[in-house]
Image (cartoon, rainbow, N blue to C red; front, side, top):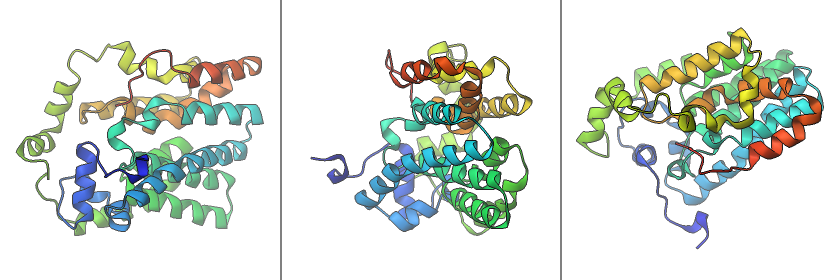
Length: 280
């Protein structure tokens, strides 16, 4: 049986999106992520199509952004490889194909790329794409603003605010245990990460070649990384969250830092995993 022919399964998040697709109320912040469940419903083919199409869209967004920013084609290529090969961008099997991170990041990067190009038409289309991404994952305008280091993407935040005002939350479809997690996110996050805050295999190693971007980090990069890791204080996942938040900027910084003659080797070593990489 091919993957797209199998019944839709997944982790806790997928169950919430399926409940949202059926018109049920879900807990925060899942009630804000309405676009894909509304239009895809419980369609296996629809979710797989979005997941598969998100990869070339993600790569295309990075390419447009970095060419518009004036990077050399080798830097653009390496940054794109670094980003798409991050284990957190792939994510755990529980979010494949029913997940919102990959399509939201892909659309956000395309929007950022068009805003970098500039001009009235590109700005309008770029903001529209980030607005659509905000309906998929509510934090998209914030991360887009940080990647671009500009407040312009925040113009679409009313999309999230309006949804928050009109959509009512409900109990978790997975039961009281998960309601408890939603009610006490900091407690749940600290419990999930206990003993692992200094675990290099979880907190550092999954970045691979992107760690080269830390050699001479910009203020913008430091801010993005701090905020990306700050999410771990209110969320139980780790690698998936920080890579979708800081992956684009750290991938760019690494590609700009590694000497040109070493970029191809760095790409090869980054793409190939030498151990079971953390993806959750």
